[in-house]
Each structure stands twice: as structure tokens, then as C-alpha cells.
Length: 286
Image (cartoon, rainbow, N blue to C red; front, side, top):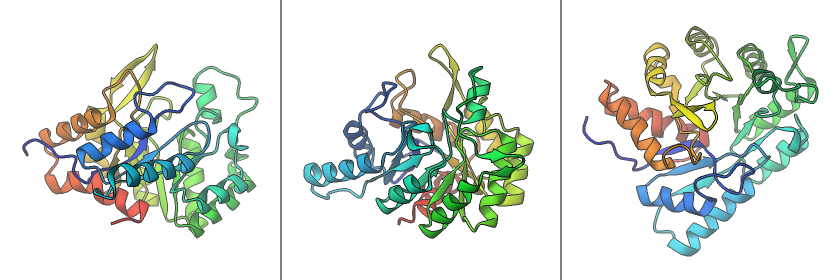
């Protein structure tokens, strides 16, 4: 395959300003970058709560500045950290009514996140207790099912991920994405990735790079290719988790990622599936 094109791509995990941690683009700059490369959609994510209102403003900005001359859409979601009251069905319901497409379990408030970073987990947001999901999570699952939204597993541990995934499937949730399983903090083995795909038919979100600490990042591309080969391209979604000032701009990171896959045996149709088809299905768009 020759040079890849970003026309029509969809990235379901990008960070932008405003954020407590400074990001490379603000929401409008990210919108402009997406339009410039011909992207179809982005889901912006924050650890601080919700991006639904911000996505709305991005789309209004696009309408006013570009007059509907493109088909780009910005989407938002809700992240269930302490700032949102943890596993809070009321926050989930209001977010979904406003158009949230993804409900992420806790990230920085997850027990696994805190323990892996050697921090106290005394005030963590629990998703599993005594081997079962916490009762409030069943209400969240019902809402996700009713609104046909996506459940993102965020920063929970692999063990918790399996428990949550089984409970979500039992509750009728159709769209489940395992968030960056390759990141050391999540730390899901390749064998467990194969197993969770086989047993629960989930999507694995594999991202561009992962933080190692001290502002340094490690490329995930080689291990992502290995996961595609082991789990099947039908189950792997290409995302960047972009926005860090230490990494290339979002569109450059995505192009590098896609080009790497294309140069290492991933076919054009397989790449299209991982960058367009899976995401469009999850978001319910053309």
C-alpha cells in the first residue's frame, strides 16, 4: 500500500483543551485539524467529567465557520471519575440525553490506576466489590443499553475488566470497548486480549503511544500490530489517545500509526475497517 489517507477516519479517543493537563489543541483547533484532513468524526475525552457540551459547541462552530461544507462531527462522552460522583447513573443519564456516545468507567479514580501509580486508593471509585460489579453499575448498564451507547472500560484492571464485561453483556449492553489494553497501567496480556474477544466479542482500542513517566512516551505500534494479528483486525479499533504536547499532533500521530500498519502487511480493506467501519458502527453514523 502507498501513502495512507485520513479521509473519513474516525478517532474515538482524543484529548483537547480545556483540561487540567495542557493539551496540544483546544477543541476548536482540533475541529479545524479534523476538517483539514477530511476526518469524519472524533470523540473527545476528558478525565474531568463530560465533553458532551464541548462537542456541541464544536459542531456549532463548524456550522458557523464552514457553513456545512464538510461532514465532520465532534462527539462527547462521560468519564465516571470522582468529579462526576463516581458510578453515578444520574450523571450518565443526563449525559446520554445530551448526546453522549461513550460512557467510560473511572480513569484516574480507578483503584487500578491509583495502585499502579503507588497512590492511596482509599477514595477510589469502585467498579467491582467482592467479585461482582457494584449495584449502581447495573443502572449504568441499563442506560447504556437503552441509549445504544458505548461502554469504555477505561483504567480498570484486567480482572475487573472481565467481571465488568460479563455483567454488561448479561445486562444487554451491545457495544463494549476495552480501553488501551496495551498500556502498562491497564496491563492486559495478549492472551487475555484474545480471550476477552473470543468470549465476549468486544472491541479492543489500541492507541498510538503510552506514557512512561517524566513526559516520555513509548510507541505502541509494534505491539498493536501483534494484537491485530492475534485477535483479528475485526476486533481492533485504531485510536490515538492523542493530544499530549509530548507527542505529534493528533493527525500526524494517526497518519504515522496507519502508515506503520500499511507498511507491515495490513491490507487497505483491513485498515479501513479498523479506522472507519468499527467506529461508525459504535457511533451509529454513516
